[in-house]
Image 1 (cartoon, rainbow, N blue to C red):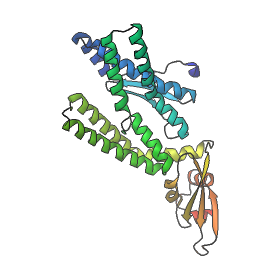
Image 2: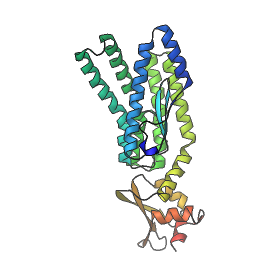
Image 3: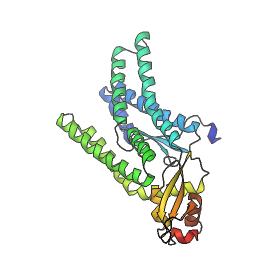
Image 4: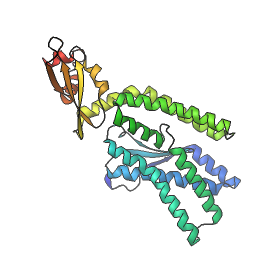
Length: 286
């Protein structure tokens, strides 16, 4: 039954209802409707693409500054899937531009509404592509690092660059005299989200390892990881990457020319199932 659901559960933050009431009484209803519609279409773009890959979606959460598709699939699916789901949101803005262009010729909407929608659509698109987590630009940044370096390191670098981008944006808008209360609140919210995500980084990493252990492999390439025989499994795991199946090459200290190999699957099984947390990787091979 769940697979036949056309739309996901949509949760609207109470403050959005408050702004709706205020907009209705202050003559800003059209502006509010345009922004709300653009944000909803954007999130539905993510949702439709995610459903095509059978992602588990909890809900779409809409708030005054934007929206988010809540799912636990990020970081556990193939990078290619995440790329497609991530860019599916910004892609909707291109369709919105096309609709506005056609609406101008057909006269479906007034010129003033089209002008407002064009400006808001461009603003939301550009802002959403900033390299700030959890915006789509921040997710794209994460995927780029995931392709280049181990997952744990990529996660940390993404959040550091995200916080740096927030500070840079604040300085730029302040110097250009564009800083407003709503923009300041948005930046504070994004900074708080990054702080929470930083505190969860170890949990995300362990979930990444657990998913590697439990799920069937979908990796397109093998990665050779060199390790010393006295190293623990927990010393080797931080070098694991996404979309890679790792073969650990263990150097023999007594005979450097002799190298033994063990698979990622065996290492994860030994760690999670056999609880060999304090056994060196050399002892485990023996």
